[in-house]
Image (cartoon, rainbow, N blue to C red):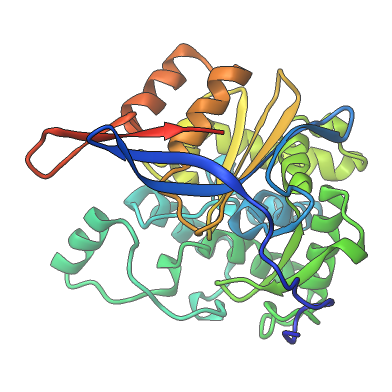
Length: 344
């Protein structure tokens, strides 16, 4: 039992199903397995399920819009003059693009939170082009380059506003994390008994809930009027509106979530270790996809296949997805070598 968990890990991996098959020369070469849950926001129950959707999944970075609710309810945005682009960064898994770093630097300056207050180590930009430019300029690792810097800055600024210590803000016993974990659990509609709390890659507590509840959570982000708490719904609506207005700040150009967020009907976010979630406003549904091997390489075919059936996005959005994640893939000589086929 890990120090931050409140129940023992399950003995068996959740039952999954084939989601994508890679073919080469007309023969299947690889099979990529996982689970999918599609939930009605209004009914609060599943419409479709593939694999064991009652088994838990750590929500990882898909939880960022929910983790931003408490800092916003606490008045952090108003107190420090944060604008729309700053709110988008609260939910971001940034790649180190100049626009993302500029927004974070502005947030630091407006809040007065010192960069060394971050709990994690200094790092380099994740995006290859940004990293190359950074290196050519004699770049030095900084904490602000961490992909979760926006989320953490929201927490730190809120702690400063509340008079709580910045040191240890990431620990589960800190009042900020106590309130954020409770808020996230409430947004997902999960009881304490069905929630496991672990430590995320960036250091803060992260909840694991049944996969279908992650789908419900994104349905509520798309349709906050269905959330049980009106104040929380208003705060979540602030974040998701900012995500739609600044999709490339949330992840980056060409990233699946950013392509989807460019469509006003969609709220989407990726998480580490194979989890991808999105909600559709007009259709009032939430979707959670988890690839069992933890990869994100095959999210594209799964999402495209789902949207072909569910609808909910414009022709332009579908075209951008098919262009970015084509069915056929080419080899190093530029010739078509095979396909990626959704099979669920």
